[in-house]
Amino acid sequence: MHEVSIALSIMDIIVKKCREESCNKIDSVRLKIGKAAGVMPDALLFAFDNIKTDTIAKDAEMIIDIIPLGGTCNSCKRDFDTEEAYVLECPKCGSADFVINKGNEMEIIDMEVS
Image 1: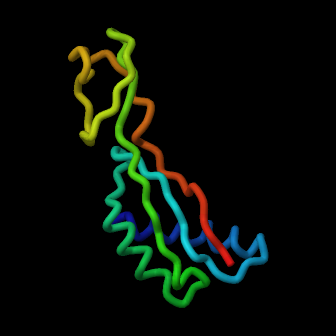
Image 2: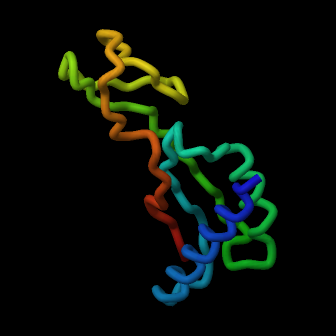
């Protein structure tokens, strides 16, 4: 369950940024996680909720936006999105010649502080 280490890293980043901005409390943090990033959102939420006690983020809500897997086919030249976690062929033409260009990301988008 590497989501615990991811949650700890996120906590380090947001607490450091909150202190740099002279804020005292983190109200929420929003993440963008790709469907193929290898992160289980429910496990990450569970880990975050358990490590936030006794921190300035103890009342913070973690919001996760799931990004679908998508790419561009080199054969038919069309972009595609899919709800699948893996792509073995272009969903438009069936070609195996494609490039995945989204769905692997994991980013902190923003956070609310007070």
